[in-house]
Structure formats: C-alpha cells, structure tokens
Image (tube, rainbow, N blue to C red; front, side, top):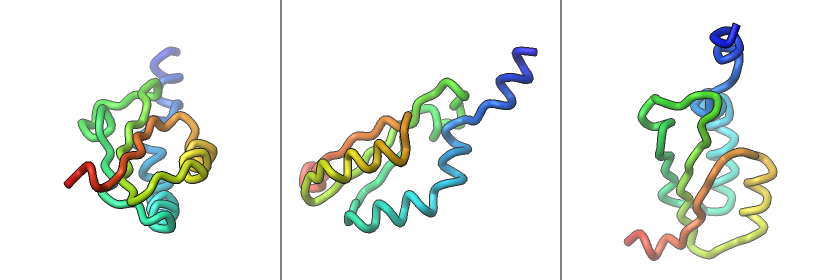
Length: 87
C-alpha cells in the first residue's frame, strides 16, 4: 500500500516537466539570467518528499518577483542572487 501511495505522489522533477514553459516565460519577464536547478532533481534522485532548489540570477533584486514566484510555485526553494556576483 505504501508503495502505491508513493507512486501516486508527484516528484518535483515531474512538476518541473509540466510547468517548465510557464516558468521560463515568467522568468524571462523579469529578465532572470543564469537560472539553474540543483540538488536531487538534477541527479534524478528526487522523491515526492524532496524539495526543489533553484538559483535565479537577476540584475536587480525585486521582492515583488520573489513573492510572486513563491505564490505560483509553493514548495520550491529558490535563491535570488544578483547576476554581478556570478561573474
């Protein structure tokens, strides 16, 4: 029974696959650069209990964007950094 329940739950990589286009569009609107996924999702080891780690580099910090991203993608752990620090 536990195995069936785990199979019915969604992994973060599945959410990414379903919403990648919409997420890219939203990130492009705020001129996000150097967007990177890391952690268990990139290693193919994510489970339904895994979180989703995302690095987003921007030219200026926009807290409205931060709050909006959390609203549209609850459960995603993301790091918003200034692009100048990645050079």
